[in-house]
Image 1: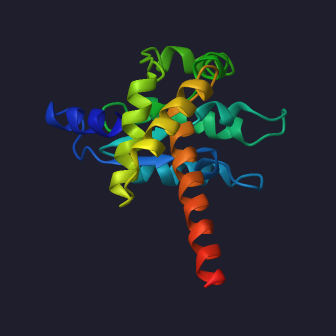
Image 2: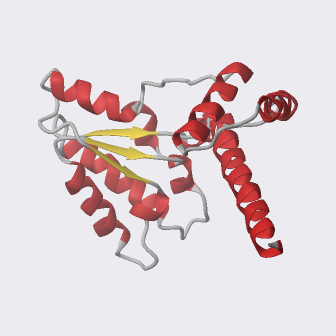
Length: 189
């Protein structure tokens, strides 16, 4: 969605480039005093004319008073004022964590005043995503495997946050199980 927003903002002339730079906390926060602002400013510079997308942005505010995430937040807020019209910054994260994050600095809530909420996927959508990913990776499932996986998704996704990630992890697990099975069969021959 952030990529589409970047393209749209370029199309309407708000941004000159419309590219997307994606980071998380590790891409903005350094390990030593004085390095976080420089690291954050480098990402801001790379995103000029486009969108800086910060995934799991709430992680910037985690940690104690001596945590360097606060420096990254302050640098981002200043950049939003200094480069208004030259860069857009999009934050992403879980709803409750982001709500708390926006209260950690007085400048955040007023600068990030638009929210898009994405509902979790339905069981049918998750199942379709699983089949799509498996197909993209060149795997074909038997009808029995498809039915078993659909039942597993129904039972497992009742209380899962970020259920798209659940499917990605499930696919990785399935591929590992299949790989292990093939390895064992090959070593038995």
